[in-house]
Amino acid sequence: MSTDMQKHQTATTFSQVRTACDIIRAHPEERHTLNRLAHRVGLSPFHFQRTFTRLVGISPRAFAEACRLGQVKSALRKGARVTPALYDAGYGSSSRLYERVDSAMGMTPATYRRGGEGASIDFTVANSPLGALLVAATARGVCRVMIGDDDQTLERELRLEYPRAEIRRNDSLLSAQVKTLLNYLRGRSPHPDLPLDVRATAFQWRVWRQLKAIPYGETRTYQEVAKAIGKPTATRAVARACATNPVALVIPCHRVIRTDGSMGGYRWGIPRKETLLRDERARRKA
Image (cartoon, rainbow, N blue to C red; front, side, top):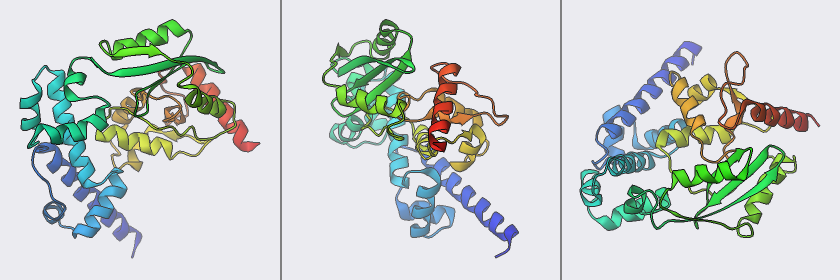
C-alpha cells in the first residue's frame, strides 16, 4: 500500500471514530450498541471496537458511559435534583446510576451536588524536594496530590474543593502513598503508580493516559499529545486537561512542553517543572 493510500485510510478511520464520538455526545441518554454504531460509521463491529479503543483510549461503551455521567454531573452542578437528572441521562433506575457514579465520582450524586457532604477524605502533608507535598485519598484511592510552599495553603485548597466533606489529617494512614511519591522524586522509582479516585471527563482521561505513556526522562509537546489522541486541533484542550490534573506526579503533566521547547504552564510553578524534567533527564542518562 502506498504512503498516500495509508494516509487516506488513516484519515478516514479518524473521521469515522470522530463521527461515532459525535453521535454519542449528541445523545448520551440513548443506548448506543456496538453493532449500531459500527454500522452508522461504515465499519465492522470488531474493527470499530478495536480502532475506537486504540484512538480514544477507552472502549465505545466506556466512552458512552462517561458522556452519560458527564450529563448527570453537569445537571447536578447546576442544581438539578438527582431523580430528574438520572432519568434525563437515560438511567432506568436510581440503582443503575449509583452503581456507575459512585465509582466514578468517589461519592454518590447527591453528595457531589452538596459539595462533598458526607464524603470522607483523609490527607497528609510531607516535606519533599519540591516543597510541601499534600496527598489526599478516599477509601477508593488517591484523589489529590498537590505541591506548594506551605501546609496551610494546600489544606485550604483541598477544603475548597470539597467544602462540605469530612476532611481530616491522617499521616499514618497515607504513609505508604507518601513513600511512593518521595521514592519517585528521589529517583528510586520512575513510575509512582497509585490507585486513583478522581473525577474526569472522557477527554481528560484520554489525555492523562497519554501523559502516563510518556517515558521517564522524555517530554512531548501539547501538539504531539493532541495528535496522539486523535485530536490534532485540540492543543488548547490538551493544555487545559494538563492544568486540571488533580494528582500531580502520578499523572506526569510536567512532561508536556510547548512546541518551541519552552516550559508552557505548570500549576505548581515553572521552577518545579524545570526541576522535575532536569532530574528525570539526568537520572535517565545515569
